[in-house]
Length: 194
Image (cartoon, rainbow, N blue to C red; front, side, top):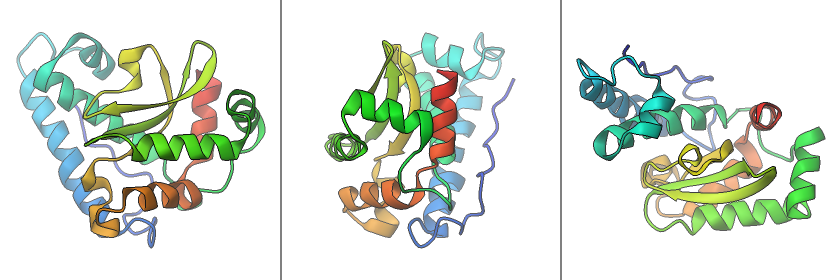
């Protein structure tokens, strides 16, 4: 089997002014596409060729793991964003956040500081692990799947995710995504399925 670059769930200019079409052209069209292309080259004609993306992530390491995990991470990330996103979640998701973090504001502050504090390249995550919601950061291509946790929400804090629009202001990028772009419906569905 070969993997395909998924289409964005919105037009390239739909997240502007918070995330520009230029950012998405580079981030989705070049960075994510490169991971998919490299992954397909690494699995072609090998024992990995018929395995699912999740199997490859769980069973591989090195370059194969990095490209498979980055394909998974980015595919998940695009769905965490919406032109109609931001604000606060509602319903069961909000109740779960309030139960495990005390309040939405306490969660948002912890999520933002954890993501901003990730040294170098990586990801900030809201996950469900051990029956509770938790915030975690992972370096490079690492992801919750490798830590027995279910991803609910992520934000990409590699420089290529924000440099065109925010230069080196990672905290401003994170704040803007949380206030304007988070697709809480997607996060709520992930919680329901967790």
